[in-house]
Length: 460
Image (tube, rainbow, N blue to C red; front, side, top):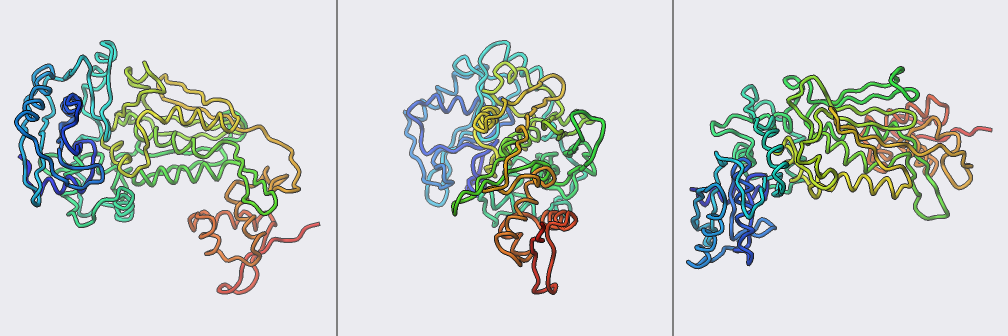
């Protein structure tokens, strides 16, 4: 049974893979059995009644009739599942706990449907074919839930990444770190770290997981003959995500259309937001058991391809673009808490919508072997420079470099620190862009190191 202190810790952590909140017993009491079956088909968890969606304990009263209704709806789950239901006094308010074990006789069915916990949500499986295929595929242990015995929580945590997670997930920093990881289901019963903890929070997880990286390649032309840039990004998964996005942005061209005094309009070869979706999908859904493959980002003259090991799960393939089911539910749940992942199953439709709005071809998906998505670039234009910041520069400068050039043109003598603040880019990115612009003879630095700044070079 949970104690009041344990409930407080769960509430601080928010809803997730192993915990769900209800303000009160819902009018449609079957919602409870759906949640319970979802937990039983995954790793187990707790339904806390008397907690709102803002992580506030408000308390709940459950009389004998409501308790009987809860027991009846749980009793309709097949095969039979034994759950404990009990009240706990938490700071003067009553929280009711439904304690759900990870079932030993999966799959558990309620109302003719199978639900499986996925991040902070339950996903529905409908047909017999989907059910058989899903459980045949997922009979093995999730890779991110395997014990990682070499990982030392006291020594191997990357603190900056951990602080970023806590801030973005809006979690209290008063909770001891081991208790937090335990509430996030990142520790085994013996307090050993799971792979998800090492991959998400470790300093250099690629030391033990050399395949859990993102490799980014820029090819000259339309095929894989001439490589002109090759970067591999390791580190915590969220940092890999940011680094890959930054690298892609540096390889794409953009036009800045400036009309009058209004804000500039950015027209990218490919909308940047599609890469947020595709890179995150690759990280959450890749098959980490395939140790011979990595996530690949390949940029060609006419397209960008992003691929990750492992085709679609059969149940997802049957409803591709409408249903999502991660091979790494713990990792998926952590990104969900950071609000980096939005509604489950919405990534594919969003990529299609973004490409359509940009008047570009729909993404192409190849689901055999590696899962690959291909985005076609916008055709080159020969637009004049009047009213725009493009023209011939678009053939040689990437988006960041053009953005820096625009800032210098607007504010002659601007410093490096001001460039960083205005562009919201990292120091390393700005240094790289500045070097390129100077090497191309487009700008120069004038003055002392402390008071000088950057200026556009006048050319005939």
